[in-house]
Image (tube, rainbow, N blue to C red; front, side, top):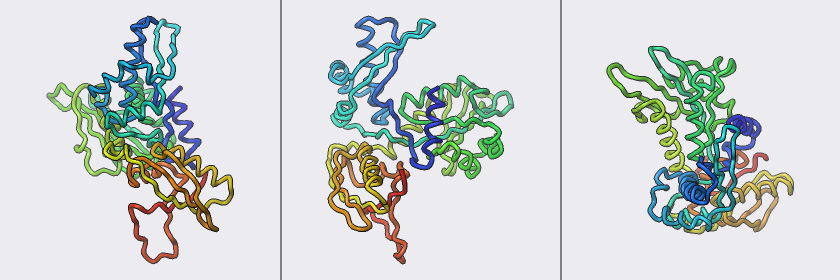
Length: 351
């Protein structure tokens, strides 16, 4: 059901956003043996460390000594908890944390801060088993497909494993994925409004007990740049972890600048009404790096926002890249277009 919701959300917003708003970054779900206080405290402390991994994008955040120490004061960060008891007797604890307090802890630990708006990644995975090649789907390899979603959820990374129905297969087949033919894969991925696409191939070389998994983004040059070995489950989980860490490095706010507060003038063109202005204001306020926002002035063409944000202007612009509502403004009258890292002139393109 969660996979379907992600897919439907992505399709519904295909003309408005380039990323998925991850709504469960500040919660974790863990299996517990019973409802005793000791079991709840132990699971809640583990949940806090898991949330630090999701929010920071740092795969080693849960190993931070100070983080482990802070987890002992779990009540300082917890918003609420509840139990999810299944018909088969399985008991899980759902722990939700206060976002502001987690973000403050992230800063204290000098970890990066990765916002809630994250790129949706389409994962095309082909497996060669006993000389037969097949693409991973819910029907062909349900356990591996579930592993992809579970590992990605643990890292707060929105992913989609393509349906590979007739519409997909009219564009992409095993050869395109195995050989990483970028154009058809990216064309098929656009159906899912994926911001990024990866192709991966999993196989076992002769006289080798380990599986080999080669993967890459469709715009990269070589598979071998990302080669993993191990059993099937290990390599797939490690691929997702590596993928999440790479995207976090690209989009998360640098820990060296996360504590700094910067003010900038954000110039927005293209608004047609007060409704547009209010929508733009709310979209800007939803960015994780933005701490305050006021409208300073406006003229016939431009709204001037004063934005207070953490990190650098580069961090602010990286957050904007994931929202299709804003596009960098290019003056059509200019003979040469000169880009500046500090230029914050954008155009409003839609809700």
